[in-house]
Length: 213
Length: 247
Image (cartoon, rainbow over the protein chains, first blue to last red):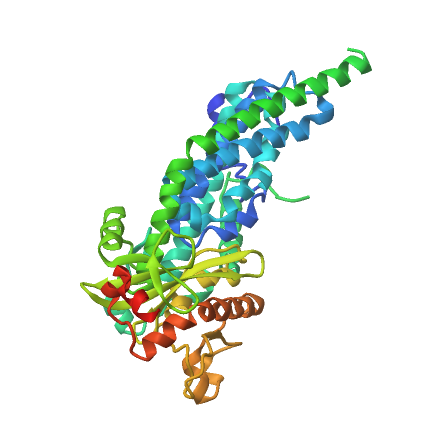
């Protein structure tokens, strides 16, 4: 994963599109199902994860020559957990309603495979600046998928776009009904599945011709 | 580095990381506490207003609106075992919120603290001044499973409580129960005392039913007095005159 000859720009963009953590690495699916009923939650969750992955990658990369290899996973988790707790505290202080809706899922960023995955796979072997960009890129890539899924779910499930109703009353009168499936977790499964398929079938979007073995 | 030196390095490193992270977390937690506390108080006030029907369940009132409405219409009192009112803050009785329009008592809001499946469920239930009709029920804190028991915090579930009765036709206290399945399947007579259950959250419903019963029972004295038409004038109660008369 850690090619030495990638430019900084490539390092950053790779996580967003080509090696997108959700669509290509298939990580972080659990929270992607849970927080994508509304766009607002998806955006906050995407940003929170971006900050955590970026900072944890940066800090771990700074320490990478000092971290004893015997306890490196514990050290990585300590750094990640501390960052997540601080972010959770910040959300509770300044975005209380959103923090209540995200409930346990902010805390669960700690166990999100993307954060630990990037720390292990990239930050331990690369200098701080590329590590920071790699973290931010992967976080944004995760956020991008979340927002895309939330857009479809909120639009079809509740007829809203970022909380604003967009379905004209005339349609409702004519018998238009919201798609209840979209509000439930299975709806997110379908959307994520379709997105992964769509993304990987676009020419040049997949790092390999065939995904999987 | 020798094996021994490596081990010492690992221990030193772990110690330093732990201390640094501890300081970071403690700093964030204590530094932001006042903001978080203010948010929690505001959230509780909003839930009291919602339960009492002063703002609707879906409404999103601003910070200022909540504060001014709460100040204007809600009075916190304490109530003892016989249903007498006292000024709040004495710690002798149960906490109760009165919703008054001018001098008339519109509703009283009972704090509900119930056992849930995973943790405590905290909320408010507002009853009309007739002492038996539910105006609203809200939940401001719980740890139930999101999507299953967690639905108790959603407006669709809470709306079902509006207009329910805590007394049955025979004038006995029965509380409001969460049905297994829909209310429509129940016999006509008990429909007014039940709300629709949540599929996949039978236990949350069971515990909340128990919790509501226990909490409402504690305030039975107040409800009975109101139903018998005694002491409706909230102003008197607050002055403590009502209290003296009863003695």
